Length: 158
Length: 158
DNA sequence: TATTGACCTCAACTATAGTTGAGGTTCTAT
DNA sequence: ATAGAACCTCAACTATAGTTGAGGTCAATA
Image (tube, rainbow over all chains, first blue to last red; front, side, top):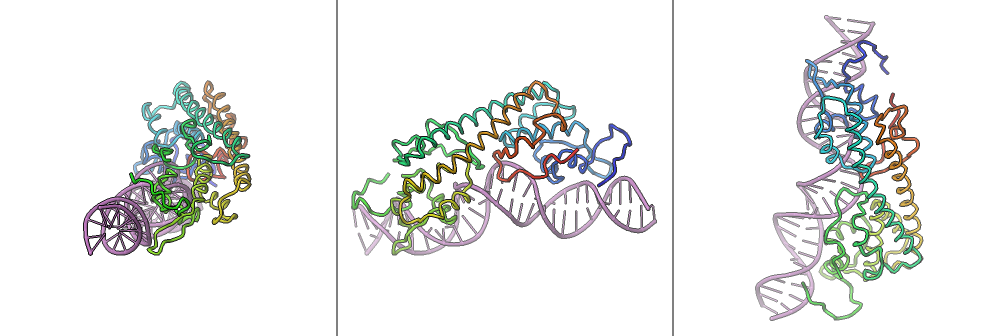
């Protein structure tokens, strides 16, 4: 553990410092940079130097991730606003409202699924024709854990 | 589209037939077999032949997937019961009760997250010390979309 | 100045959940 | 008997979200 160097309070941060303060791995910060989620200045020796505002940006990214938003979408949302100044409260408000809506939808879908599941536990027919669990048209996009979207041809069979 | 062959009503099914009736791709059925989720008999010519009970098994797998259960866990749950006879209503009851519980937890976590997010939309402080969104110890495992589990060291930073 | 920890890039690897394609075989209807 | 559809295996590829390691450089401290 490195002792705080109290040099300049508004000194730029190294990647290790950002990692420590944000709880992300250094490799993750590199990775986010390749994906355009964050940006760095470089020292003469080509090392990354971050303005303190990156901490806020990273915080926003982590919250969005917890809501289940994929990185590409987070990137798209962040890309419309400047990456050199700190995110304002208004920026945050716009982003988080949108993400909360998506989270609402995810919760609604999962809840509908749970209710159907509850109803079907005692039944177990799983009939393609009769079982609500097998009829995807009322739980439109459950969108679970997997990396891929739901197959649109799903449920077209007999 | 192949016309129904009404041969024997309890004939075993080919992989193509299972694909058509289940809505899964043939490649997915192959894949599930490599993962031990389903099993097939083989014809003299080494082609897969499925008892009709596979349709039910596949239905259960699909429902579990919608709830966000990873395939490995579905496999583990299914592996304790015989794969040659159809799943009974009791089998289904045990499995689905368990999965519903997990779904309940997922919903509860996401709901807690949403409530925090809602509370933080107008604030936007995102302070590591003060913001509930940044304090993971009350939303223990949000467990969103990604393939990896949450980093346990998360939130240990300044 | 020398050392050592932190940093750099790039490629390869992990894990999940599949899909795609090449090269070859089987099944079934005509 | 033969054409063509459906099937087989195996390897490689897609996508997401990173991690790991090799080989080499930078920077701060003693």
